[in-house]
Length: 74
Image (cartoon, rainbow, N blue to C red; front, side, top):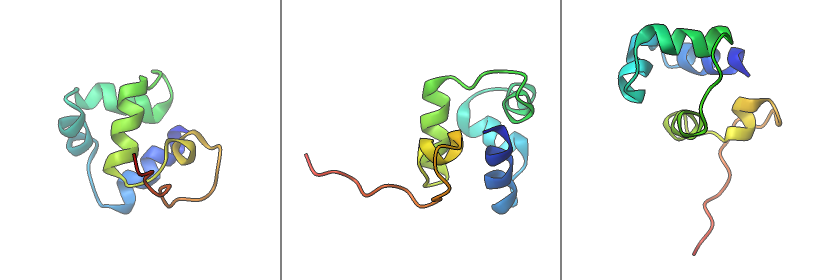
């Protein structure tokens, strides 16, 4: 899981600081998410999926399909 958020960030040529600013956390906190030394809270997981336009399932390693699911109509 943690490897995927690093790969997604690097694919966009972003620094950890860039994602930390987006998530309103410190670079150190974000670094710990990538290293796997800190659990990713649900709201942060959702925010990362939205930012990267992918699914939480992809980030969690439950699927290898990078594309986001189609939005349901309500």
